[in-house]
Length: 220
Image (cartoon, rainbow, N blue to C red):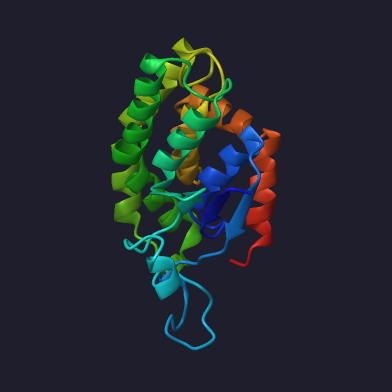
């Protein structure tokens, strides 16, 4: 098997695992945990993590995920998905250069317009204990995401329920995996019913469910 995915399931590596499942690509999974999640990353019995010497040889940036595809090493989860879709083709991949541009545009849009704010909603509405939550960050994130959600809602309405091409593609995965972080803020989805229906449909896909089952099986 030529494809290796480095990263834990409780990270952006889920994006790459989901796409690999959709494409039917066999892969080797090398668990690499974020160093900040460990009490002492330098402990002799610490698992392989993002600051481990062996992983820094793969990705000197010290972030997950990374892939090694038969000797070709690539970082950044959204770029990895665009590469894998382009390589393996099929209906999930862009069909022409215009769709390649759209897939890149929407991926960058999700990363720049939405991800930081969506993560703040995950952290401060759900993941963090109550004493660590910051209502000001929640309010700021809700305000910042109102327009992007409206933009995406309109695009989905015009695109037949998908990001591009009227069909499920890598762009849906890349954008959907960013928008997922905002799920604790139900009011955003109530105001954008096309976004809500689209994300719900994505999460019913067998390839997503398989990835999520592996994520749930991984220690928190």
